[in-house]
Image (cartoon, rainbow, N blue to C red):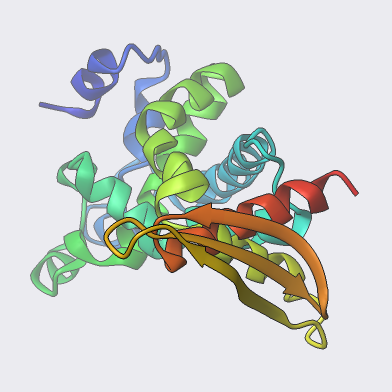
Length: 226
């Protein structure tokens, strides 16, 4: 498979094949082979900007709305070197990378810094060749699962609430068990979450940990309406 078969499989249009190829040319390859295409560093600059805006837009649309500080943290996580390198490996995009012999021998094809830059360049090339619509179409296919993880799987509501109030280090969050009812084999915990002594949310569940999460969710939903 080459990169154009990959794009065909993902129903992504392209016209300037040389521009797409350039996204996968590392500077070490140019230094050794003197290719006319040039390396991918300028495309990397463009792709970084596209990824910043794309991730901001997708995070903005999460419901319930995330506060600005939390969106900023999540965006940094989504477009970090480690996260982008993971996407490259998941899709085996590093097989298309052109490296100099030295970089190849020292493991450059698996190095986070090199392959994350390559991914940014790839997105930059698609954007320049086909515009925002096609670039976002590809990113949705490659990154949407990670956007969803940000929304629900990787970070729970307690983490969200903690980050919501972390801008003011003087504020404290306390989870207080209000009551425990029901039989021993099926208890029901009711928990209140307090910020600086004021109750912002309640949660009920069959265990204390889940009740705390539910309370944090309730608090976040109320804070989002303030």
